[in-house]
Image 1 (cartoon, one colour):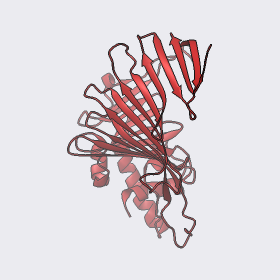
Image 2: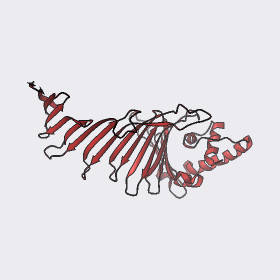
Image 3: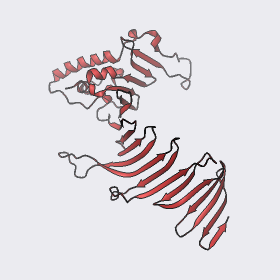
Length: 327
């Protein structure tokens, strides 16, 4: 049984703990309880003491220069400044920083001793949730987990998970899973940090999954948005594809909306052409920063041409084959 299991088991058995220990349960993995009650009590008590000594210094061990809490007795609740506390270890390195109700704990050396697979982590705790962010050797984020901050194991549910992967060229992929909403968003970024594609998924239970034969959830692609950029980090195009369950695996299916931008230098806002399934539907052309001409195209040859000054429509013409009306 690993250390994380021991810590969480202790909380399940002895809920009356110090306030400084409340965040442990939500941060550490789900427990597998000892068979022996006596063995559990002795082992967990020893582990709790060691981790508490590691993470939480006593006030006497904190240099006065690094421990501050504002005296706010004579000010109103709205004017009270947020109190700050900084706890240092024997090597004068930060072990815990408190900012109001937030607690920030760098877990580099702690996780190395307990579980080397956790890497370098930072834990933040407040009244609503517990967040743990793990970093790689270059201090780039690898994984972010958010739990409900609750007093029982049943209520300490995992709310969301975000993971990052990086290529040798500096490109990255960010995957955001929202377990409560049942959604997944995957964002692909170039070396400049600009999103080149974003895919939106819904997650559903496999109808064939049972308690005795659990199956992975089904991830369904709902839509995707692809973007291109110029060397000045200006967007050139944006294409959105909306899928249905039957269409997601077909290359030529889905409802496609596309915007193409062009930069003329006449206006700070680029001109734009909008397409639906390859058909031109809208053209926005700027005469200057304040004046824009919009032309909308409809099936059957109908067009609407509108002029805008400072965002206000000042003129409009509606035309169709053999007919034109101005207003």
